[in-house]
Image (cartoon, rainbow, N blue to C red):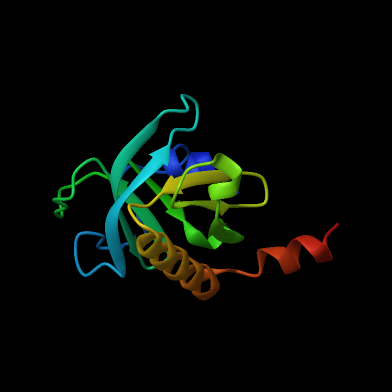
Length: 139
């Protein structure tokens, strides 16, 4: 299984291989979030699109068929999404976690934060593959 960061950066995945998800059309959720980088811990504002179990992000909010995502997270690899203001001490922050990694995001308002948590949480439930049950059976 790819690490969250490998999934995010496309390492170990063919460029443009998004399981046929047409991210440019009718997203389940889209909007600006600020995201922390993996290696250089700076905060960057990116346009995020949630569609068919994948969370894509782009530099620009104008997304077309020819757009190339800056990264993509398969939400099926995620275990939790929850508020993180108390963890990173930033207003409207939330986190997305796998078994081994956590990524942090900052929304523009409390409502936006709660809407993203709800949308991503729903997507995790819809697209999860019983990873936890499999791990528990084979330890």
